[in-house]
Amino acid sequence: MLMLRRYVVVLLAILAATSLAPVPALAGDGAGGTTCSNPSAPECDVNAGTPGQPGNNTGGQNGGSGGDQGGSSDTHCVYEPAYPSAETIAGLGGQPAGEGGWYFKSCYQDDGIEVTYPGPSWIADAPPVVSPAVLAQQARSRLRLPSVAIRLNPSGDQLVNLPTWLALDGNSWQSRSATASVPGISVTATARPVRAVWSLGEGGLVTCTGSGTPWTAGTDPMAASPDCGYTYRRSSAGAAGAAFSVTVTVTWEVTWAGAGRSGTIAGLNTTGTVPVRVTESQAVITS
Image 1 (tube, rainbow, N blue to C red):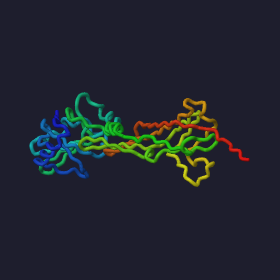
Image 2: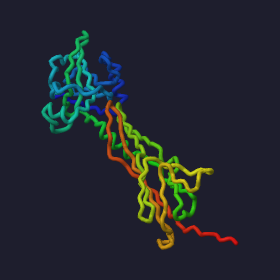
Image 3: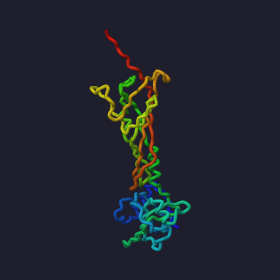
Image 4: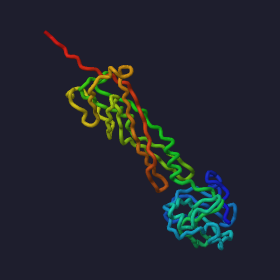
């Protein structure tokens, strides 16, 4: 059984190995691989590289023995980490038990003859290949989302029957990204704000698909917000502390990309709360 002892993180050892035993480059391949003077020897090194898309289901579990008939000192093998889908793994007979990982395998002889094994192969005792989906979850956990900064207009106390413009500070509505890596593969998760749900304290809810438009001087004070607003119908005098608790929850969609793959994972939420006093407008009588 082919034994791959060294872990992908030992990059200096890999570079030393490849400099002593250069391997012809794979066609269209810009990634690293494994170099072995004897593909059945336990000293085989793994070089972290980002492979292309997994091949078809014809590869089988041939990585441990198939093709080792050329296992003399003039044969070199390259192993690229593979990321087969669950369907592909099922077509290969399922996930084998024990330690190991899925790899693409190609072997070369000094005379230039190449033997390539189609599809991913299970290599027992090899360093396990980190799935891009696993790195995506790690990248998601590293996302640092901005705090929610609420802006209302009128500023300060609100008035019954006067349109309130709801908005978030610009920094509260900007995409954020984070990356998780292992040698040879990086995955970036990106969080994008998609929805803000406002709870206005007197029972009203408003859902906005943007950060809202701040009111600007010169705008009709009786005009409603064009995209995110609310009008209070009663004062907050009877509420706790004579103020309504206004809460906004921002929902973030999280996508990821890396190693030639992409997807969507569980979203995130951020929340901000402020107390808001709502008063009745007082008529002024002049004689």
